[in-house]
Length: 519
Image (cartoon, rainbow, N blue to C red; front, side, top):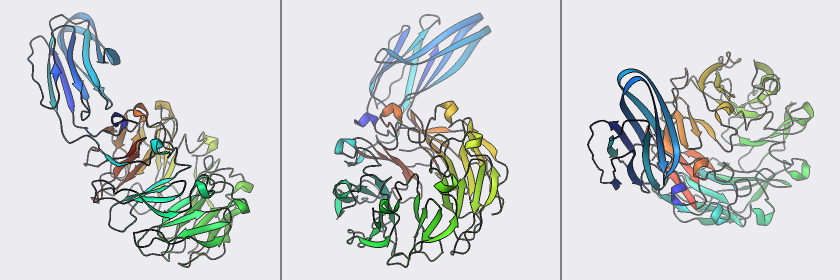
């Protein structure tokens, strides 16, 4: 993946092209433009740092009916086209917007059906610099063929407030420390093992997590091997200590064949600050509580929610571990065929019997998979209670939490971002529910074909219209799916705003959050 296929960061760059009977010319210092006064007009070159947002203003006289076609071309080939149908008498002005994904080439605007002799006024506002590679490597060119085989995480490993890169290579775990929000230091091998050379063939079969297990502020490695769960403690931000077996079970030797059929989570279930193991077995949910240097033997917290009860896999029937009643203890949320069931945490000792909170959002209502129709559990109105967010075919629905006892009926928050508008699955077109403007209301971030769109949360009552925050980082620019080219939303420069982190073919790219665009 070359530089032009990486996340470009020129969201304020604009080319405004005005067609008029009398016009004048102006040029910009950031690129070279050549003009010609004919029907094929305004040849201009887009350099590496440019991101075009082209707006065409077409003004012409109408007597009865006029049909005008405006084409945006790259290197002589049409890449976008609009047709104006004008009816009436007198001068009319029509505005056409072309969003051009970041790329190199020579562009021109071609008009047909309008009077001859029209010229162009072009100006450009150019801010910022082009996206730079923060770190070579960790991409497909460097043998990181996909995220299932070679998982990559973005997390602060040395407790300095800046998020780092953690990659599980074939021979071990590599860490590239963040260089103060401006780039990454060279990657270093922190521990051998946990990779394909030692049998960790995929993160689906052998899940690995980066979690602080001993409450020292430094994230550790937690790996589910064939025979049990191994933990490698963080050596104060400079490496990992040797891995140790913390508990038997939860691996392939005891039937936990993959993380889709038998999901496993690492989360504090009893409020003591130490993350525990939560596993969805065939016959129910098992929890192994942590005692800071190991796990207690797993115990059955509740029956059901496993394959024996029809929960065949986590893509068809998603299950989440999240606090639903604001008591500080994570609960179980399951999307069954007929609706959403909740099993509340009984003070860190087990789950209460599950109850039915809301109809819909399951296979009976067309939610066939979590990849095609993602569902999230997150507090959308900042009241402390987790809500349900679902991406349906026609848009986004939200069911607000009714104070920890159920969900209100779901409401339609925003059109688009579903299968009806081309968002076919969450791997090709990832969608995140995260707070991008630091107002405590989670927003929608979607990676479309041509770039990253953001729809801000209107203080817990709906989403505003989506706007393009970053061109690139989508399928048009080679980011084929989130397994091959993972994209994350993480604060990279310690300013409390989430940034875009993308693992391209040739390295790690970062687009920083500027409040209303990514750069």
